[in-house]
Length: 404
Image (cartoon, rainbow, N blue to C red):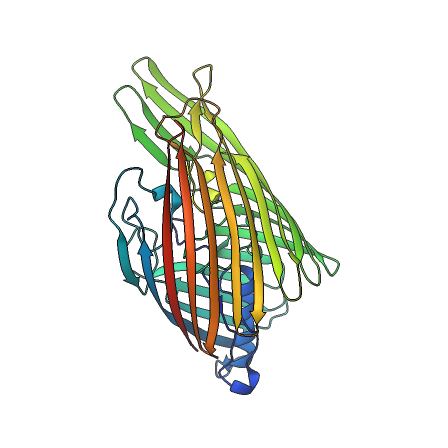
């Protein structure tokens, strides 16, 4: 998961302004590029200006309460989001809980300069993915015009516009989702194309100690990501690539070894219109050593023994397909499924997970310009290398009140 503040796709929200006559949007996602567009519309509607400057800013957020009921309590400390990889394989008690951890604070600002608008973005909630409740900074970056972004934000390898809207905090297992420190350059090509490249925080540290083997991994350089994106009037298409360079150090009774391994991945994703105001979002991503870029990494580094006895990176592949249905201006549903699979090549422990399947369907309603309520049914199945599988079912009810 995104240990630094995951978030995968939360749920629907209305972009109402502080002035009733300026209310905009109906229901929209609150993660990814749709969420950013929503906040910028709020900025225009409820904008304030720092006295004596040209800097405009917006402060807002929401209070959220989630009621959760699960057939099985998940393994580990985190219970307030649906993690397929935490599905218990043995008996487990039912789980019921209330949570306000998705409540969020946002800051946006814009300052005109000779280099273009300088924008800042801060986002915080109470949802670190370790089961605790504390302030977590999900985004904190500066953007100069359309050219340079510096700070913590969405990885260039992921597609923030293809994230489906789920009430569940984490969202589909097989979609790519990472927010981390990066520096990104962007080059618009015409009106609809954009090319972007970035150097990003690697987060490759891993250690395991056993009776006859000590294993350590680390990053030898920042992760490098690039994407090309086409923005149509009613949809988009994105192609992404990722390159990683890892150092794997092993120590056995027969000696120590240190070697470099290259990880790489690709992704194709997008969205398209369906019937009426409905839309479809999709993604297919695959690569070696890129497990941590998926929403529910079954193997964050992805190491296995090759037939020759060497440690090699294994392939992770995720596929996600979701449909968004607009029933009426104040009613919408999002339904779909996602699968994440780790290759069986090489020697992985029999109890290691090699597949996670996630499915969800929800119904979301805008009660007032600032209040939303929704319900969601989730199902997940985890499968191990030895073929054993376990499933879980969860129901979530959520209420959100916007503050700005």
